[in-house]
Image 1 (cartoon, rainbow, N blue to C red):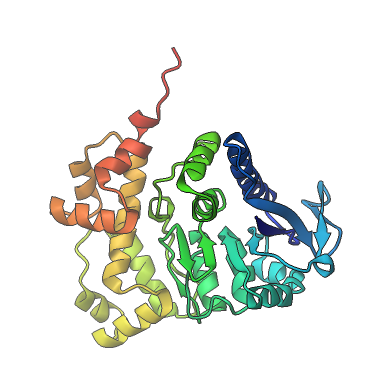
Image 2 (cartoon, one colour):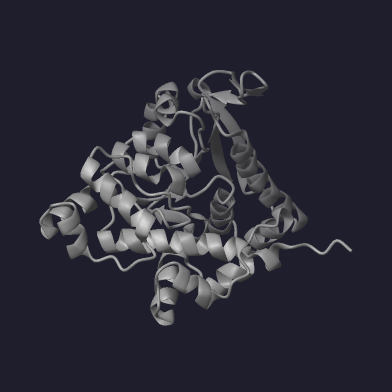
Length: 329
């Protein structure tokens, strides 16, 4: 039986903590129905005996405190919420404990923004990892030694597991169940909680708002220009002339400030506009393609799928107006 420690963090996301706990317990229920012993002994572990959340709206009691623990096989780090740097500071006491347990052979799972706590231990340095796409830029700045894969839904690197967005982290719990129990148990839990086991990417959920958390005013002006004129033909040489920079200098500064090349940035702005149109408009895909600055259907489909993970048609079927309308008659 795996001894599992779910960390009762300060500023913990209660929903994700409980999803992880219930998922593992449901796997035990499945095994019980098969006349098999349980796979997980699950405990909430805190620095103190209780944590108050949401302006003391909730009080959660730890089943054990760190100083009462002798051994654990698997540590689950739920997401934190609010100011992430404050959350890291408020949970510093967990850091040496996590490091010590991993040194003894324990494996670690971080869910969504729990990656900020895990990365603070140094255990993600040099490893591929993922967190919620909305916090990807902040994560990269705080932890440049990690290899963030912002489009991935989850990662598995030698006993260190990371998962994406808060609710999609349930997919990582299913992965853990499949790995430590079996696939049938994971399928059973996916049906109980109605979770799609086939997902492997966050791409379709990413809302591109432009990477403007930087101090380069010229690059920010270029970004503003692209966002206002993306339906037009945009050439890098024209931008270089407009903003009085040598092309190579502009491309270098833009990549350094935003993490994207100029071409990638234009593509992402256009794709985000296309997504919004596909969600709310009844226009055809070809009409939307022209509206966002593309004239080649094949090129548009390839760029759209590159950033979204779905074809424009599949995206429209999933999120479009007609497809989302419910007939209540």
